[in-house]
Image (cartoon, one colour):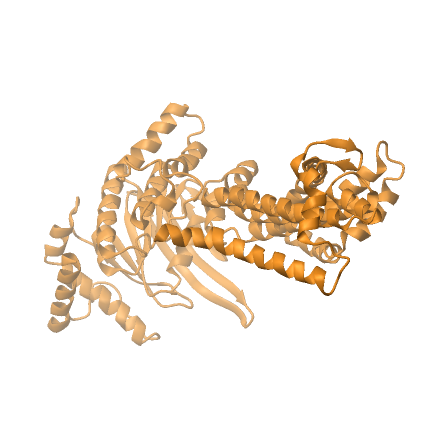
Amino acid sequence: MSDYCVLTRLSKVYDSPKGPVTVVKDFDLSIKKGEFVTLIGHSGCGKSTVLSMVAGLNSITAGGIILAGKELTGPGPDRGIVFQAPCLLPWMTAYENVMLGVGQVFFTATSQERRQITEYYLEVVGLGESMHKKPGELSSGMRQRVGIARAFALSPKMLLLDEPFGMLDSLTRFELQQVLIELWRKDKKTALMVTHDVDEALFLSDRIVMMTNGPEAEVGDVLNVPFPRPRNRKDVMEHPEYYKLREYLMHFLEERAHKKEKPLTNGGNRAPLNPQIQEDAADLIHLSVKE
Amino acid sequence: MRETKFKLDWLILPLLGIGAFLILWFAFTKTVSPDLPTPGKTWELSKTYITKPFEKRGELDQGILRFTWLSLVMVAKGYAIALILGTPLGFMLGISKTFAKCFDPLIQILRPVSPLAWLPLGFVIFAKAKGNVSEVAALFTIAVCSMWPTVLNTAVGVRSIPQDYLNVAKVLKLSRTKTLFRVLLPATLPYMFTGFRLSLGIAWLVIVAAEMLTGRPGVGGFLWQEYNSNIPEHIILCIITIGVVGFILDRLMSLIEQRFRTA
């Protein structure tokens, strides 16, 4: 499959009182159609900046982004975004929030078709009962479900997920990851997600791009996730490679936190595993599942 | 137990306060100011106005609710002009930084000017206007004085719309009209209604002053006439009426405000 979304030498420079600050420098990434790619890195490393440039909500200083053969120049409903905060309009019901986008994208459709699309996605994310409630009457998990429904209902070329479950408790997070992975499988959307949750990245993605710490963040390493699809959490966690990969990601993030300057070796040359850390990690996961 | 507490809070304690005030008032008339009518005398001379609130005996001798009605009609007209001018002005101040920089200093200078100062200017501006000059000048004064809270609150409301909502509008590529009516306006509404409530309070303050100066029939006009006729009991009647009506208007507006807050 050819590259569907290509980010070429993408850079972001902010002006600050102390002079220009390069947040992201020469960021290269290409995503295949239907692929789920995750950017992982420490907070403030510029991963969200990359995502918001793809979303068109942040201007691009240098380089460019091509999506489905066209250069992106601004925001648009061809990219469905799930923000960290659900960003619902509180004076509209869940249904109206989704419908607002559906009406924009499917303006040639009949009102009945639009209603069906809206209802379909709200039902798939599990809001069939409460689609006519306002965001204030919904729990934070349910609000984020509406956010997911809105993004998918636009029938976008690409999904952009900006730490979509960052503000939820771990149980709700697991539930919504399941909702997301199922919808993604049905709709076969190309997706770019930003997270700092290693398990989330492993469970959802085909490829994980590790970003070096900002300023001047760039691609540090890329990890291919070999777990077969369709995935379920149990199988993924019992996969013989799981802890090795998890350990590798954690190692990368820790290296970055302590030794900012030292670059990590690239590719298959993975750091040796420390059995003690591996055990600790296993315990951690075990605990978070039991919660 | 809870019910008695409830009654104590909103019925008995306020009555106690009013009772204390009446005693103080009475003591005042007996000591410092013998010219001030006592509460009893005030009631005696005012009761025809209260018991026959809708009677019209002459242009400046009408039941108190009739006067109130006349004042309220004027307030409604002036207030409507204030909202029609003030809301879009506030929106422009909130949306455009350039516009705000141009006009904010001017607004800050005009805002504290007293209604008593605007009224004569109103007479000058509308001297050749058709119809009742004093009415037009009074409306002008009400509108100019009462629109500022609406202007400023609307502007603050527009400025404090969360970036999240604007991002939604941007991502969905909503048209300008759709952005205005589906996002900007609903997001600003709570602030606008705070402005509307404060504006109404000022409009009610201004009408009394405007009537006193123009001699138009209404609560304020009646008050001034009774001062000239040396019937202080009626001045007190008017003050109480103005207070009660102002209080009711404020309550009504905050009820509406709360409705929009939850929406």
